[in-house]
Length: 59
Image (tube, rainbow, N blue to C red; front, side, top):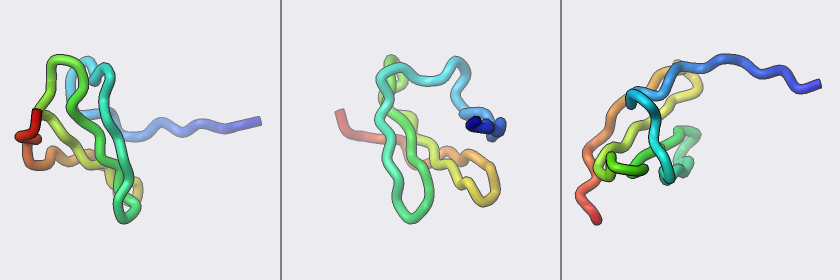
C-alpha cells in the first residue's frame, strides 16, 4: 500500500492549469499554467517550502 504525505501547499491560489514542471538539482520548478503565464515557483523537498522565482518573461 502506498502511503501519501501532505507537503507544503502550492503558493498560487487555485493552482495552475496546463502548467510546466521540471527538476534541477533536486528542486522542483512549476509555472506558466492557464492565465498565470508568468508565474514560476521552486519547491525544495528538504525544507518543504515553495519560493517564488523570477517571473517568466517568455511567451
